[in-house]
View 1 (cartoon, rainbow, N blue to C red):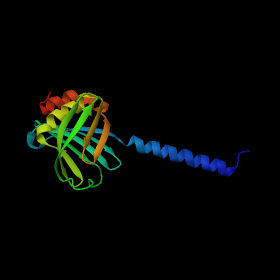
View 2: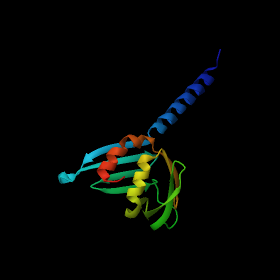
View 3: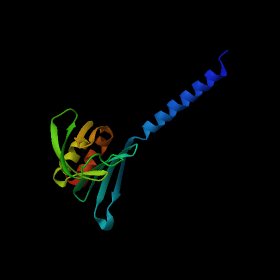
View 4: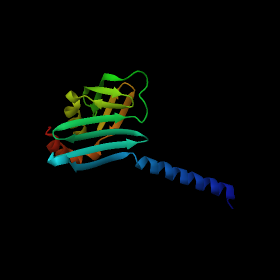
Length: 155
């Protein structure tokens, strides 16, 4: 016969594993299309959230917007414009500039359209800039690539 304590510990371990798995499923992409105010046309927002971190791709009215928030203040004195880079699907490393303010970073306008286009056509991206080294699975965005290109007027 199995001691009750072993049964209880096994039950607690199974519940803990189930809860850990449930947390992982919340780390996913959210995709929504909305109409802009006053007939300004559609916009498409693709956002990834995980443990306070948020990576957002937004396009509307022909303009692209990309932001990253780690869920905490960036370490050190990082406010300002900084060079970074990204790599899609192990391809060439591409440069991108980020404006960091407090606990948020935004891709500068000059790089936003190309960066966004690369993200919706790839499977994985690695991004790096001061205080951040992150890899994202982009495959959930691919079915929305054509719509994003139409809304943004890119590609």
